[in-house]
Every structure is written in C-alpha cells, then in structure tokens.
Amino acid sequence: MGIEMDVVAAYPINDEVERVLGLAEAVGEPVTVTFMWEGRAEAERAVLVPAATLALWEHWAPTAYRASDARDENGADAEGPELAHPEEFGAFTLFRRRVGTRTAVARGGVVVAELLVPDEAHWLEEQARNVRQGFMDPKQKAAFEEFLARQPPIDEQ
Image: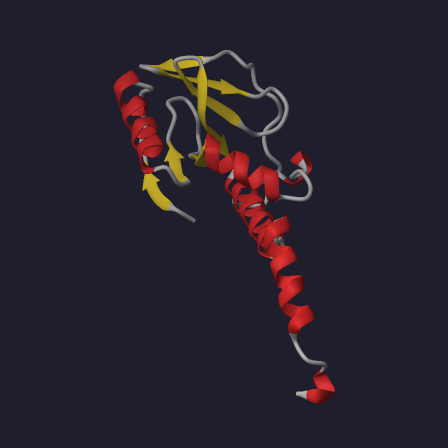
C-alpha cells in the first residue's frame, strides 16, 4: 500500500515529526509509518492517509470498519482509549480519538490526513475498490444498456 517509511521519533521533536507529516502530505497517497515514541515499549505502526483519499475510500466502502476489529500486527487488541490532548508538531496538530484507533492530522485548522491502523487502511482500500469496480455512473449505464439493446439476440449471432 503506497509508500513505506520508517520514522524513529525517539524524542517527539517538532521538526522531525513535522517533516514526516509534510512529506506524507506532499506525496498525496497513503504512507505507512512506524513511530518509536519515547517512553513506549513498542513501536506504533500506522498508515497516514491523505484526507481526500480517505474521503474517497469511505464514500465507496459499503460499511464502516468495526473498531472491535482493530488489532495490532501481533493480533492483540488495540489499546484502550487514551487521553485526547492534541499534540503539536510545528504546523501540524495531532488529535487522537478517544474512541477508535484514528488520529486526525490538522494543519491550519484543516484536517489534511488521518493516521489509521494498517488493518483498517487496508480494509477500507479493498472495500472501496471492490464497490467502485462494480459501479457505473448513470450516463455510462445508459450508454451500456443502449449498446446491449442494439446487439442481436445470442441465437442470431
């Protein structure tokens, strides 16, 4: 899925995290990121999905990803809710959801991306692709029906 970057954020220094978020925003496609936060025993893997891409996936996905399905790579349940205090990294502010596993990334008061657990990002992308491939917009559907109507019956071919 997209680009994979490993980021070591041993100390949450503004410019280090800001550079990663800025790079991911500039790429314009999902970026897998691994954070090593100070004071945490294990790395945190996430997929940084640009807001427009996430909106497209969620438009086409027929159902929402169940938060109870959120598990880390080892199959363990995701951590319980954390305090939702915003964290600022230069021009970017991270808003971790108290419920669920997402973190919104905002710049200048506008959400530019979201951090999702890799399983949720993969699930959303797959669902969106499957539904979108089976969809025809009304003009395309009408043209296809007209084309089919002009075809001779199968036994006459």
